[in-house]
Image 1: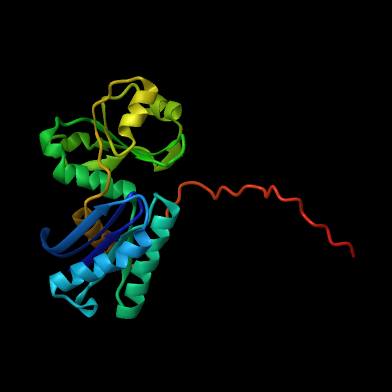
Image 2 (image 1 turned 120 degrees about the vertical axis):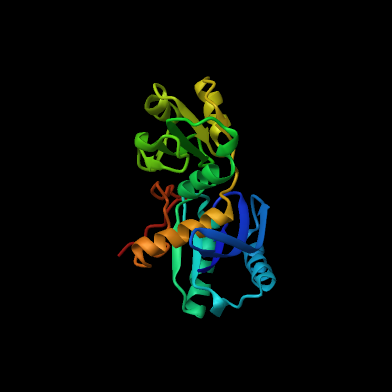
Length: 243
């Protein structure tokens, strides 16, 4: 399958075109940039760049994969809206890939060979507040030597450091994600960790294909927020109109 993968959910803007067949992945064009702002201005030119360098047209694509959260509200909406627009114009399916799944897959594929095998892995990502996006995974004990045989141990959630610590403190766990160091320092505990600031775009493409093959496009790319909207009450004095 020919896949366009895009992401601007975290402090990143990235796009990739690759071809996936029989678990073989051929990257045709790839571009990424760490940035805290300006995703709306950068993402579409980046997509045009990778499409031109891949020598594919949008009609040649089979699938569009996009990170659908959790992450920064504006960045998520930019990527999802862009993916939906391309999908609508090219009449192609668009599949959402959760940020945490993509981070976990990126670790397993590109970081884990340099680390010991752990029975538990905790993905801990920044919310830009005092809490964290968190999900724990564990090795399938029947196939412990297979680094990629990982199953979910908890659902994805937003949690405080103390709540996460209570879940993982008795476990032999390895921390993954861009908030790992902050979390570790807040808990004053020396867990092993690796900071991954963005999911690899190849992981996004691969998981999009996997999700599409298992579920079709019925789940689409609905945003995953993990928290409700935080709406404050206006400080302005409200004018009362008398009947």
